[in-house]
Length: 188
Image (cartoon, rainbow, N blue to C red; front, side):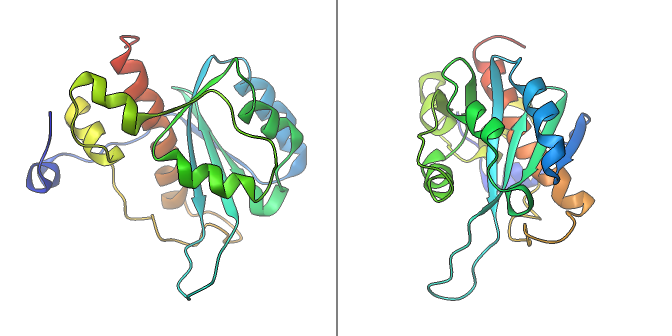
C-alpha cells in the first residue's frame, strides 16, 4: 500500500477531538503522569525548537503522550524532565508508540541517562501490514483517508505560550501514532 503526494493533497484534514492538556508547571506533572501510567499503550512524539544556524542545537522542548481521548503536552523547556515523566518513559509495562524514534531518543538522552523502554517505531512496524510508505502523514492517510497537517512543524516550541495551532499539531502527531497502532493490531 502506498499513496502519492497528489492523492494525499486531495484528502480532508484530520482533527483531534480529544482534550489537550498543556503541562507547563511542575505541580501539574504528578496528576498527569498518574493518569497516563494507568494505560498499557500511549502515543508518543517530541518537538524541538528548530535551529537555523550551523552548530546551533536545542534541547527537546515538548514531549507529547496521548491516549485515544487525551493528549498531554509536557513543556520540558519550562518544567525540566521530571522523574514522574521519566518513569513512564522507562516503564516496560507501558508501550509507547511513535515514529522515527532515533532522533527522539537522541534528544531525550540530552536530558536523561536512562534509556527509554518498550517503544514501538511505526516506521518498521507497518512493513508487516504491507504499507510501503513510512511517514506519519502517509501511513495515516492510507489507513484513514485523512491527512495530518504539518503547518506547525518548524514553529517555536520554546515560546512562552503554545498557540492553539501548535497544541493541535503536537496532539495529533502523538494521537495518530496510537490510533495507527491500535487499528493495525485490531483494537479499533
